[in-house]
Length: 138
Image 1 (tube, rainbow, N blue to C red):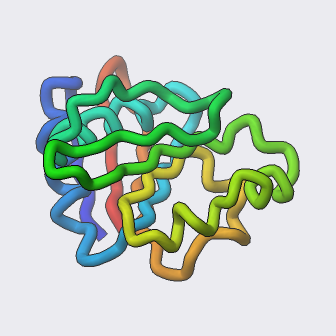
Image 2 (spheres, rainbow, N blue to C red):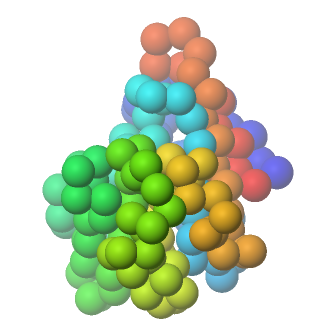
């Protein structure tokens, strides 16, 4: 496990690079942290570092957003906060995304825990004072 302490949003590029470097072939990354911890902000930086020019926003109502890198690779960003039943994840075909080999960045994985593939990477974000965060990459 790798732990990164950041004192301000200016240090997010370092944290995003650490997440990307830790992938080691894994394509599903789950982000755990309380509301407002900065999950979407970190994902925005990861997507930018991977070469996508898309505007990254939380897909709270859409459940999934798709971003495309300059090389044409797809990145999928999920927000399961509003999921109330596992059937909702089945309805939009989560398997096609999670097992596609494309990078899947997942917020609120607690809502679909039993549907996650075995080989996921976990990023935990703990909130400190102001913009201070502790990010654990596992």
